[in-house]
Amino acid sequence: MSTERIRKIINNKDFTKENLSYLISLEGDERDYFLKQVGNTYTESLGKKVYFRGLVEFSNFCTKDCYYCGIRKSNTHSERYDIDNKAIVDAAIFAHENKYGSLVLQSGERSDKAFTVRITSLLKKIKEATNGELGITISLGEQSEETYRDWFEAGAHRYLLRIESSNQDLYYKIHPKDEKHNFETRIKCLKTLQKIGYQTGTGVMIGLPFQSYNDLADDLLFFKNTNIDMVGMGPFIEHTETPLYEHKDALWSLQRRFDVSLNMIATLRILMPDINMAAATALQAIDPMGREKALRYGANVIMPNITPTANRKDYTLYENKPCTDEGADDCANCLSIRVEMAGREIGYNEWGDSKHFFKRQ
Ligand code: 5AD
Ligand code: FES
Image (cartoon, rainbow, N blue to C red; front, side, top):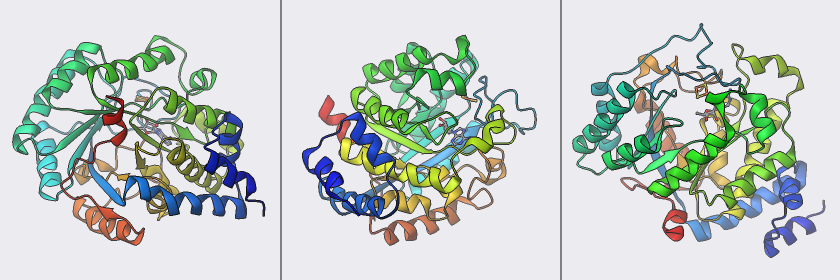
């Protein structure tokens, strides 16, 4: 086994695209060595804490038609739901009472006035019901600057908007090429969110059809160059009711997609030591201990799903989504044990903001 090159890259912080691509593609003993190096060292600067964000996927109505996504508007087999504000506020109270520190509100993308106004009032209600103590992240897609501002003023302070792929050509292979699915708009939204003052998160899928290691290296450089505060990235998992399913035979094996996802997390941790990085749920759809492995090699955020159980099975972006039958309690209990097993501590009641955000201010 040759570890010389890996050691040199890490010690010299020599993060060229070529070197990043090399780290992302590691296999076998060399990969084990690399992951171990990152795992042994990154908590020295970042600390051992892992932050919980209670995730509420409150609606799967979506006006977009991404080729990979199970809740795309053209999927007529998706059972649509929309949880009312009262039930969402109850879930927020649950998160607060269980010392989660923060909440993530996510849904399909909509930008009609009724929706945006509803979210503003929902955010205010959540703030009020939790004495302003619960951090609020939202993940509600592309919106106007005005809407982003309204939501920020109403109490949201972090926003997740994945770029999905930073390679524009690849972006248009996994989205329709039309006004509604515009790469430039996506970038512009990320810039607007940063300008307004949100802690801004993005991310990509790993193992997409047509995607190369070089594309993934570019994704990591994109995060660095756009000065992003938070990243969530995980394996692409094909969904039968989507157009990308036809490429299923050309994909990497699920195991390879999983392994490369961990490589991406570890590589990004050395590239951007102070950002928040989520252990994506999609990792767990492949490996039952997937998220815990991500925590060992660089992730420091985990998002227990606290969507009221009756609706959880309908928010299927990809198939084989874990924990869709369990109540929120089960998830919280099993997760706290698992986090400790990964040698980490839970930052109860803490917002767990991105350290990077405060440095770039
Ligand atoms: N496989 C993996 N991740 C997916 N997402 C959507 N569809 C899939 C899929 N089939 C991810 C996207 C989106 C996030 C909410 O879920 O990256 O931004
Ligand atoms: Fe809903 Fe992509 S299908 S945002």
